[in-house]
Amino acid sequence: MQAKLSTRILFLTLMAVVYVVTAWFFDWLGFAPAKDEIHYWPTTLRFAAEPLPSVELLRSYDEYSTPLPFMIFGWLESAFGAGLFAGRLFNALLSFGIACVFVLTARAETSRVLLSVVGAWSFPYLIGTSVYLYTDVLAVAGAFVGLVSIRRQHWILSAAAFVVAVSSRQYMVAVPIAIAVYRITQLLSGTESFRRRLQSALIDPTLLACAAGFLALLGWIVFFWGLTPPYSSSASEAFATPELNPQHGLYFLAVIGAYYVPLAWLLLDRGASKEPFGMKRALLASVLLLAVAFFIFPPLGNPDDYGIETMGFLDKFLRWVLGEHEALRLVVLWGAASLCFWRFRRWSLASALVWTHALLLMKAHIAWDKYAMICLLCLWYLQADAPATPSENTDSKKQSDRDSRSRGRQTMGSGVRPHRSKPVFVST
Image 1 (tube, rainbow, N blue to C red):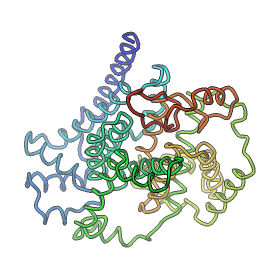
Image 2 (cartoon, helix red, strand yellow):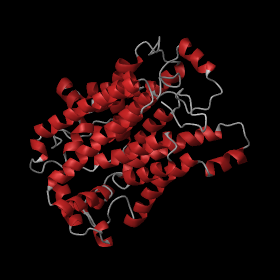
Image 3 (cartoon, rainbow, N blue to C red):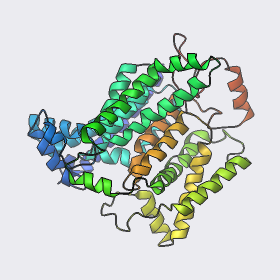
Image 4 (spheres, rainbow, N blue to C red):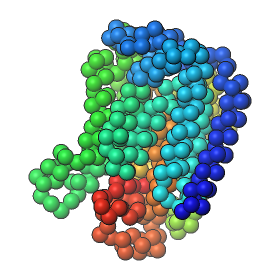
């Protein structure tokens, strides 16, 4: 145990070096305002002028996202007067803190944990957003800690973390919703009477913790009378967009299929399945329906010139490789989404996370790889917190036999043995 802990701490030390080198590359976080910081910084200064923000400020600041990050950045500016540097350093330290929580709490074998970290941090936005005064890091930290806390039965911490996440970025509500939906399906699939199952659901601590995140979003919607501050230009732009953008949800599936599925197979799942692409007829029919969806709602509407060089890496890469051949680009995106569909074809907490995000991101104003960051982080953590299981990763007889031997132990889809004192909420 001590040797494994030492290995993990050594790995975190190497990650700390990576963060330091990244900070050095970005002029020790002292570079001029860039990208979204150009409008985030004036918003931060408004909050710095009001340590306890007024109702007027909370209803008029000119941003899409909920205000907690700007409140914290404002407090840092009021306390230290260090400009953008303080907020950037806060994000960098918080991002490294996410890595520490990931590495030190995951319960799988150390080699699997470290490979999962490599997979998660290979997503360029995870460390890329940590050197800017962005709202993403705090939101991701809250949602991630919420997931980890639920899996450790720390219900109050989980509820608070979900409130932080949703108060930083609205779409982070996808994480508690996905967990709640998966938990409800488990409760409803029991053998007790429906009334007894309903009573259990009403007092289930997992659902109560998730409800905190949903109620936080509902509170902001009531306060704003919408998804964004009502007297900001962002509000008018948000409501000028269509109510739903199915193509953005389809692009999200392609992002998961491109960034996660091949790398997870390469790092963790090789040899886990004898027939990785052996689709049954129902699955094949579903993939064909997915092709119809891509034909009706092609995720090709992003601009040729994003204006931000780090925006839409997958889309930009396909444009670079395929040129302006939109039909080929659409086929590749459909192929990536089909990989995602195949990977998460069975119901699990991981698939609940993927499909919930895909549905909620239909309301996003643009298709962007970055919006998959929290989902990818959670997927990799589920891999690191439990061994691969038949529910998602394999159909092999060997694994099925292993699962049958553990039948009777109450788990939530991952194959990890729960603590004897109380069940553990786990799933991959």
